[in-house]
Image (cartoon, rainbow, N blue to C red; front, side):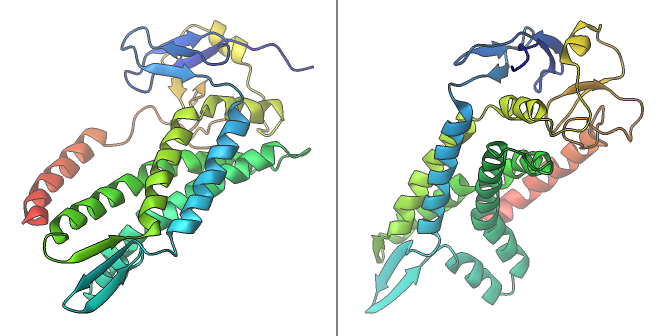
Length: 278
C-alpha cells in the first residue's frame, strides 16, 4: 500500500519564501502566499501524458531534422535548406564556434531533453528502476533553457519575410514539423509535474537517503534551510559542500557572484546588440 500523501515544505522559485504545500488533488495548483507564483501544479495521469507528448516530440524531431526546411529558387538556381544548412554555412565562413552553438541549441539540446525524459518515464515503469535516472531527470531540467526551437523558428520566419520579395521560396516539410514540435514541447513543459516524478522516484526507493517530508514540514524555518535548485527539495545544509539527498546535486544558499555576473552579462548583451542588428 502506498503511503498517504504528506505536506511538503517548498521554497518559492520567484521570491524565496518557504511555505508548506498540502497534498493536492489532480488538476489543482498551489500559489505562493507572497508573490502568487505557482508553487505546484498537478495533472491527471501525469506520467502517461508526458510519455505521449515526449514521444510525439521525438517523432516530429526525427521528421524535421532530415527534411527540407525551405527551397529557394532564383535566376534558375535552386538552393535547398535544411536544419544543418545554417551551421554548415557558418563553419564555411570560419565561425565554427557559432555553428556549434546553433547546432546544439536547435538539434542536440531538444533531442537530449526529449530523449532523457522518455528514458526517465520508461525507467519508472520498470520493476526495478535504475538509480541513475534521478541524474538523467535532473539534466532534463537543466537542458530546458538551452532548447531553442522557438528562437530558430523566429529566425526562419524573419528570413522568409525578407527573402520572399526577391526570390521564390517554397516551404518544406521540416518547417511544418518544427511548428508542431514547438507546440508539443510547450504542452509537455506545461503538463510536466516535476515534483510528481521526484516523488515517484522516492516511492520506488531510487534515492538512497529517505526524506521525511512530514518532519521537515513540521520544523520551523531555519537559517540553514536551502531549496535545491534542481529538484526543489527543501533541506537543512550543514555546509556549502552539502548535496541534495534526493537528486545528489550540490546545495547552495545563493548563486555565487550572481549580481556581478548579471551586470556583466547584461552590459555585454547591450554592447553586442548593436553590431548583431547592424
